[in-house]
Length: 253
Image 1: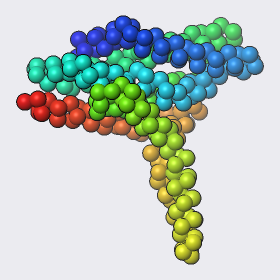
Image 2: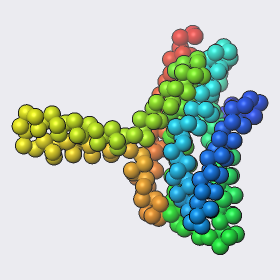
Image 3: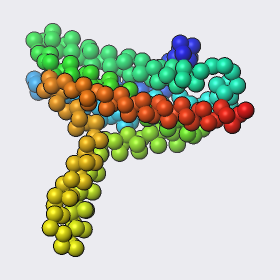
Image 4: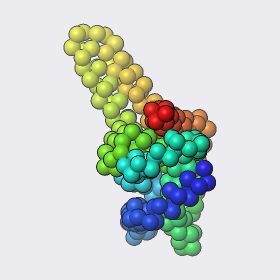
């Protein structure tokens, strides 16, 4: 696992991918921080929450080549024809991408230091927001890894990851539209509980929204169940990635 981690982590800095991701994250976080600083109302929690919206862009960039590049070059055969554990391969690659995210987050740590140096506050809600940020980073990175496992094209991998993450970020909106559609259809056929049914559908879909589940962290209200949900989704995609690789290994036999 350590060898896989080191190989993948260092590969980010042997190609433009790592530098592009760090530069993009630094620009976005710097712009948000400067916008707040200029108005004299700096809030690190708000900055981190805003940065979570850009998972949809940054995660596909850093995960698109984790497995698809190996498949394109044919080096993935080594995973299937040697005694190496596929579990170690999957976890090592996820940890490499996660480590890159941790490096990018140093930019926010600098903003925290500047805020405190200027007499600003660092509230409990900021800690909760940062915790959620990294749990979400893990979840979305596993989604990106899965997208990279199902194709040998980095472009297709990035597009698939982009779509899945975008849908994840729009779950509540999708639920609202689905609920409205159900209400409209049931109302048209004169169903009395049309509104209740529509609201039920909307609520059921919104239950899967990780952003809704973790919104109270900003208020300093920590929910273990919300973090378990994020980890569970991440583990699910890790398992799916493992199964994709396992199927490929058996086909090599």
